[in-house]
Image (cartoon, rainbow, N blue to C red; front, side):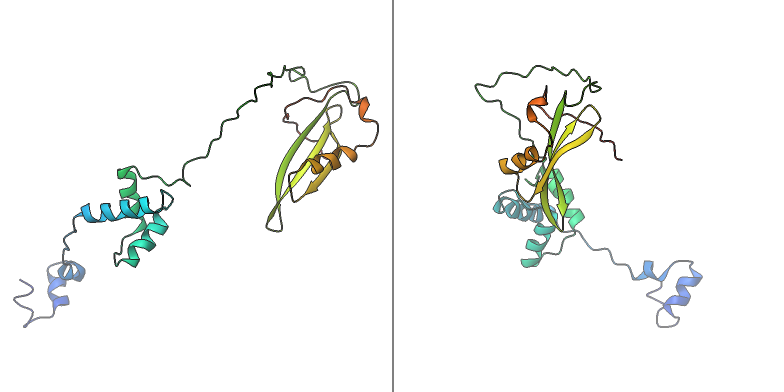
Length: 191
């Protein structure tokens, strides 16, 4: 009706009379192309990347061959096809005990409140970001008063890092009665 009378009246006036937006008049439905070709292209790109590419890189590769597809659509197709990037999957590496290692007995039994100094000393090795790079920190903590009695830091996680932390402990090391094998979670008191 609007097309037939477009020579007499303006399109915007006719849309106002009919109480419809002009965008509805100008809208042309575009047929969606079958996704079979797109699915196959995504699968080929994914396999060619050795299951590494995610939606961003697949989108870039599709644009190189002249296909414009949104990342959301690529993600939906990948999910439907069961394509999961190697970098998306959590990398869990189980701890395998050595042949000659026996299970360690829980001597401390979570009794962290000891009455004597240097009765139990625990250690932990962790990492922190410093100036955009990872650095490692080795700490020795006396459970008697939760005091850090030895520490060292450096850019590499080496035996030398632990040796420096041990060397920074003031006092005789033979005074330590128990040094548990596994690291313990200890809340440090800051003073």
